[in-house]
Amino acid sequence: MTAKKASAIANANIALSKYWGKRDEKLHLPQNSSISMTTEGLFAHTTVCFDAKFTKDSFVLDGKNIAPDTPEFKDYIGNFLTFVKKEYNITEKARIESKNNFPGSAGLASSAAGFAALATAVNSALGLGLDEKGLSILARRGSGSACRSILGGFVEWKKGVKDDGSDSYAVELATADHWKDFRMVFCITSLSEKKIKSRAGMNETVKTSPFYAEWLKTVESDLARIRQGILEKDFTIVGQTAENNALKMHSLMMTTEPSIMYWNSGTLEVIDAVLDIRDKGMGCYFTMDAGPQVKIICLAKDVEKIMKKIEALKSVEKMIVSRPGEGAYITDDHLF
Ligand code: PMV
Image (tube, rainbow, N blue to C red):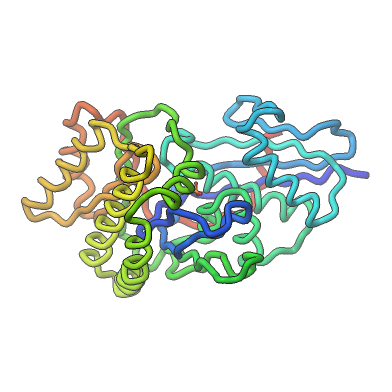
């Protein structure tokens, strides 16, 4: 039998209306729908090969071998491979290599990009013939928000209501070309790995935050506003709603027991600068995920001025500017 090999590239994505909490931990079914932007230029490049001559599954991430007996392997790649092999009757072991062109596990959606690239590569290597919906569902089995990185531009992950997750997948709301001057400026305030993985953190939040039920009550109207704002390219509506939505999610994290605090002093320094820039009349907003980095939402015409102001802050190690990007795609450029 010949080796079945394929490679794919997938951009990360950053939610404008967040997902935090699952209704099914195994299938990664969310409690609420979410909307994101696929971020051009922050991507994962992944090669997978299934071959009868391999004696074990293996995974190399950014040049580091992740041993199969570690939770880092078992809870992520291991679970995903077990599902794929069972679902599609695959007997061969897999070799996977993945590279991010940005720091992993620091609240920059590396697992979203990684699993979207892996699902796309697996689909091609095994000839599964999945369409976008099928790919989104497969990527979701690796990591919830990965289902959004299959698609480009502005994307909505419909939470679905079915127990088997067959209606929980992402759809494109608008292409990357729809809003060409929309920007996110990533302000990196720490490159260390986060202490609490989003997976563990969100489960604790659902169980213990007294505000969780309130969050779910407001999510639908945030989604509707952001959806409409994207379609009408109403920057103020999208920015205001996204910022408020992110603060609500972080309030949930902070009121989890024990509390989950992803911010550092740099996070506050950047937030303060954004508020100051806005006070002076420029339209810009912020959002944050499961890490201390702040993503500034703005329009292309204001990027330079905003970056000048942020550059002066002591706590910002690095900035990356991103615009709406394409969905995941196959490449002939194999990592091995
Ligand atoms: O994709 P996960 O399961 O690691 O969760 C990501 C959650 C947030 O990034 C904090 C929010 C979101 O909607 O992307």
